[in-house]
Length: 195
Length: 343
Image (tube, rainbow over all chains, first blue to last red; front, side):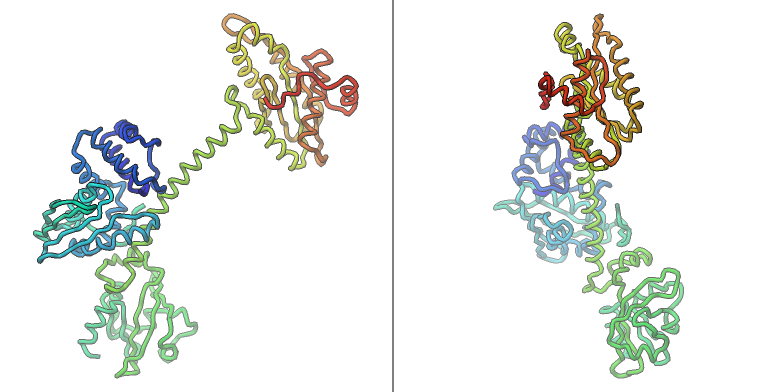
């Protein structure tokens, strides 16, 4: 799995629980390295091992941690680029949801060897959707939950999200838009590039 | 022109302009209108608002009419001088009027910032947003790559430094010395090579132990660095053998002085755990004058011959290489104890 993914997990552990905790996670996962580099690619098997070790060391359920990881990715100022790049997807939250189908392709445009799991949005009724997430790593749907909760806030939309099941390598979220102009939302300026 | 058509154009081409037969702007799409927010474009002379950079020498509407259906490079005639690309087509029902569609081209990144444009300012089919996304994504990816490069570079420098350093003394090692010597020879300038072999060091090791020996070696290293210039290279090339390479040497007096000082200071007893370690040094020196062709192996062998002469003459002294020394040495057989080059 790409270093960008692995390293964000590492950063999440370091920022939330301290460097010593990360060292413990790395040792327990039998990583054989002290940490990940963002622009290198690592063996796929390492990522689930790190996630399992993280849940054990921190002593919290893995799903909960995965959702926190998703939240962390789009709220931490160091990852502002992620939030901004997601915001390019749409002018409002619904538009943004529709752009998720393209997310893996968009990611590959930026970093050609970054393969994100496939995502498919289905519209059931007005303002009611389900998101089918490919989950090569168990719990990826929970990461998306964390990301979507923050992005809904970002767009000022009140949305109800629920993880409604997993199986055969897929996880499903249901999304109910309650109010699309619930709050002001965070400002997004196209030209305000970060970094 | 029909209002319904204008509405269509506003959606499909939000950066279009309609220019009437007199050369005045009669309509501006919603996005192009934002480029002149303080003053409406409508009613202004098109060529007074925009300069045509290519094709060259377009000064009148007649010139423009000759360039319909061709790519135009334009620029706003105001402080920002935003550059634009465009194409102009006569209106079917009114050939004296023109419709001009514009785009930012490569100036998109600046333009979006300068005019605070949003997704809604671009046609849904326009690739502008994807372009901005790519610019931003690539910048972030490049920053991550740069971080990786920097950390690899740091690791590389540390590894190289380690590969060229003698860990006990912190001096350069034989490998580093070989590199410096090769560089000196290739440079063709004048330089000198001093081979320094410690006298009585084995006795210190044997009677006071290896800890004392290591301590003495560290002291020796400090003295040699002290007594040489910043530009000189001091290397430990064997257990108690050192090589100093001294660039830009003007004459034997300098070398004589450096050698004397090193020997003098090495002879000062080094205290170690209540005992005194006494050593001295023998030195063999080769001076290569500027422009003399030389080979590394030969230079080192000559320094060895001179060193052997110092040892033979009773140690604690410096000898300069001269061909006669080699003849004398050959007559007596090879210098003993100086064949362990691998150290």
